[in-house]
Image (cartoon, rainbow, N blue to C red; front, side):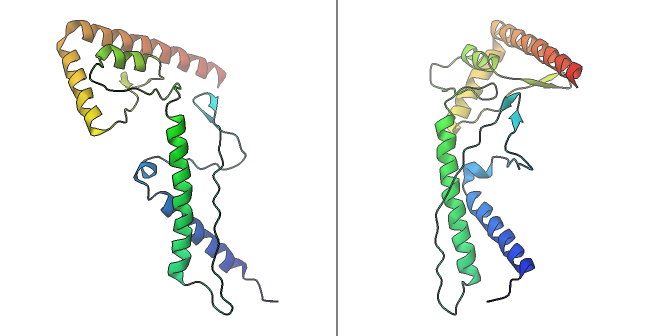
Length: 189
């Protein structure tokens, strides 16, 4: 029986996982999303609701030849391949759940008929934080055409006093919600 080398085994495992993560993060969409490391247990809460984990699994085979191991390049390529497959599963899952509205995400189409009322209506349903008295509006992720359309809508709304009044009313409402939520949170702490 061959001897075990625990330090080498641990280092190989670390290198394998680093290569898997590199393969997974090679997808530009996943590369822009922060990784949340789960330290212990299987439960986590985000903004008051429990996060649901969905396992991703990939099957792979390692080529073994009698008397010959893998080259370093083969080792890294196989680990990156596993990471890319996991990344593909995560992207599919992301697109499956992206159309489901939550307190921190609301799907919205910046079509030609979109107005500032539509945008404010979406933000009205969402959780808005405040920092130094200013609202931290939820991030909008869209394609370049959507960004241009959003800029047009906001610029038009800033020129109109009625739209500015609606915007200010939403800020006041969200500020009140934020203050109430923070007050309740402080009482519990």
